[in-house]
Amino acid sequence: MKQPSLVLGIDPGTAVTGYGVVASDGRATTLVECGVIRTNAKDPLPSRLLDIHEGVRELIARHRPDTLSIEDVFFARNVRTTLVLGHARGVILLAGQQAELTIHEYAPTEIKKAITGRGGATKEQVQYMVARLLHLKHAPEPADAADGVAAALCACMKFVASGAALAPTSPSIISSKAFRR
Image (cartoon, rainbow, N blue to C red; front, side, top):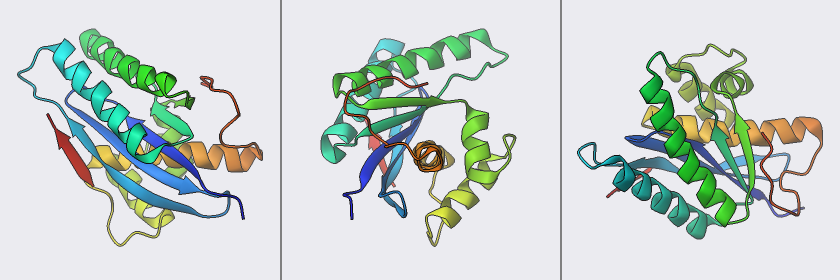
């Protein structure tokens, strides 16, 4: 049996970044850890981005995943919200690239569809299905952590379905603990 691949899934945010680490051998997938990285809303944006970057780097150093799966930017009505979310994604992508991880980006609707069968699923439906898929007694909390796990599961499901290896040999971009700083 091949050693399981580790996938770090991220639901980016500047206040709360959800994450989930899952191990998959192509047949079985298990939850290793999930949680959130919280930043102080009173801190300036550059300080919060540094906290997110350091939190993700700590996760990568601790778990040594093969792959980073991150939720892509959605288009919010508030342009500033979309831009700030882009900054958070940028520091997360930087941490993944610095660690030479394979990086997969998925639209929120694509992750929801992979996990629940519906691209318009609610956060509660995602939490429920994450718990079912991983045979957990309780859904990951908070919802941001479940979304991070869902991003990781999405990468596992996409690659098992395609028959491809989860982590190519060279890094590329292909498309519940809480940290408080």
